[in-house]
Amino acid sequence: MAGVYKGQNQAYREERLESLHRMCVINGWLNKAYEEKPSNQRDYFKGVHKYGEHENVRRNLNEGKVPISCARSKTSDTTFYIFSYSGNRSQVKCLTIEMKPKENSTIDTGMHFCKFVPVSEEYIEVEKLSDKMGDFVLMLPYFVETKEAFNNRFTLVYHDWDVLRLDEPTKKGIPSIDQDIFSLNYFSKLR
Image 1 (cartoon, one colour):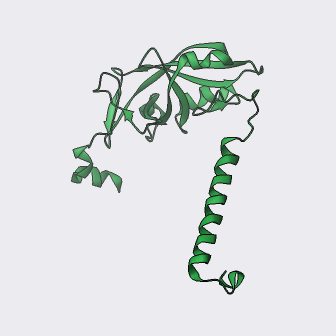
Image 2: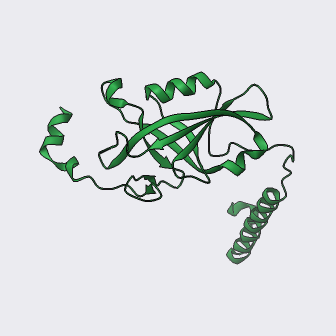
């Protein structure tokens, strides 16, 4: 770069580079700020996944082998929605599931797990989704060796990294420290 400004002193070179940097940054900001965005494109599913097949959602909920993306209701701390493709662009199929915090709940490695059961299915207009959806949530299954031990138990990780807390009124909070994880009995189970 020094060869470009031959015959000039160091102060001139520094001023020239500084003005180039300013010009590039300002142009970059202007291009991003005034970038045209198509007005007909809507991002209804930002933060939550819309599944292709509704049967896969039901199977994943019953088997508990994969995480499930869902949204918490704006009106209830224990109601969640899982969305799938309905065959129509203006509608989405919504599976409503209810958390049962008192049924078959457990705490393992500091995470709270409880049972989730399907309540209803309905078709919802895409424009009305924002009225129903609150927090975006990832449901993580309780991994155990048998399906009977799984028993539709999940824990929740919210979009702000809070987790399911059955001891909190909002059912949401920071993970707890489980003292049993450091016991010799726990380590002997891992072998």
